[in-house]
Image (cartoon, rainbow, N blue to C red; front, side):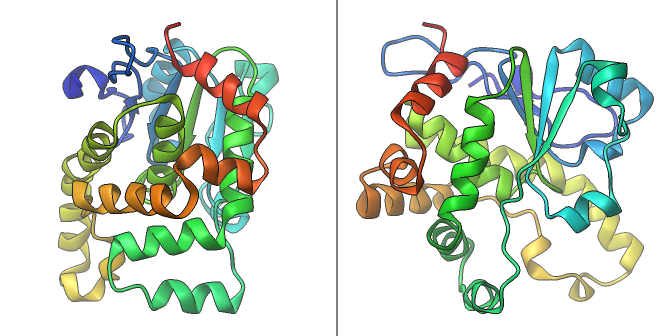
Length: 248
């Protein structure tokens, strides 16, 4: 998977990587510079912002809640399109209703959390995938805060739809732990006690978690494509995704 080549040096993003170079069933690979996943781009330095633009990113899809966007807005500002040629879309993959919150708190493992999120947020996940499918020409950046959970689920759906094997999707997911661990260690040092940090924030991204999530999709929906079609994504939109991310 060429993980070192796929990781992008965008100061100060810690978890930015290209989804290109992943093997496909026909012997080709996913397209480079088509879709990038990352943590919070609000952290980017001026050099990091320029690196993002130079890489060809023209659409940023923000999966965070509106209040998170207000708290940590992109530094490109309200005139992002006229000044930088950037389209910035907020398609939250999140719910705030009490029943959903209770369900998420009851999750015993991160895989349970992801499977529950897929069940509860089919419409939200579909909206994120639709935004990717209909994005204007140019590279796309998808992100949340850490680029771990919401971005991890969206990326898994996307890669599975275009034909990337479960093992390779899980291996990509696992890279987040290595990328975010230095940031987490810094955070723990600042707080002074790891017990003060919500354990769900710990950047543990074991491949087994994603494999269990993909297995759930297979058993419950016949795979990611079946899940998304049931959630309201059209066959034509799945074709757009495949065209955007594959080399054929």
